[in-house]
Image (tube, rainbow, N blue to C red):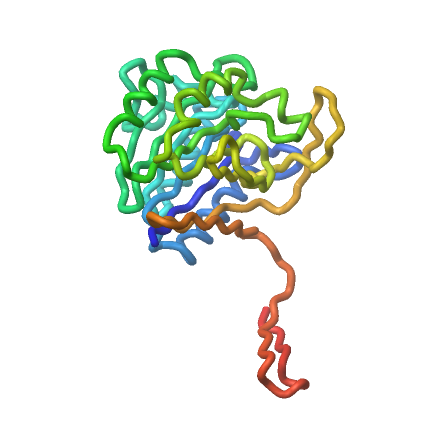
Length: 275
């Protein structure tokens, strides 16, 4: 199986600044160190948007510096907090489509990976315009019968989480007409919600995960204002082949004690603390 990784919602700010009392750079650097230590054999790390909290060029420079330490190749997607021009200036090799959106395709052993730009500049909800839809439609028409995995920032549908559902892709029905009936689309990976969420939409499995800095607290109250928390950050370890998609979530800063458990040992020897 091919191993890939997903990181999301880094929300970097200039070095030394914090968000909700947490340093986004320190947490992202810790994720990079953990990946280098545990998953250097991964084929790719996809970072699904909200790379910089204010779209600040200084923050993108810090992002580049931090990700340069990553031993795994990486792919960046923009999110609603990002500024396309500043992001492209910091990462000039970042691929774009013919209409200058930050969208691209990468063919991998497990199938075709499609990276989407769902940003509607100036607002927090997403939008996938006619030009982007046409690009995606053409991509999906190529190399049929290969598994396709879609990566995007915004969910293209409501996830029964009212505080975030006001900020999903506003034209999800149009998006569904492009991807919703395509049997090659095996999974949609997205960010934006800062929560571990999974399920299926129009028969397509999906997953999301917590960000590397702050999270959205799980409350089903309605209202415009989000409730953020400092629940543990995570990254996803994903295994893919033609028959299977497996997504693990790793809380890389978890400091809880760890134990070896051997049920076949004598009762007094079954449990041994190791960390």
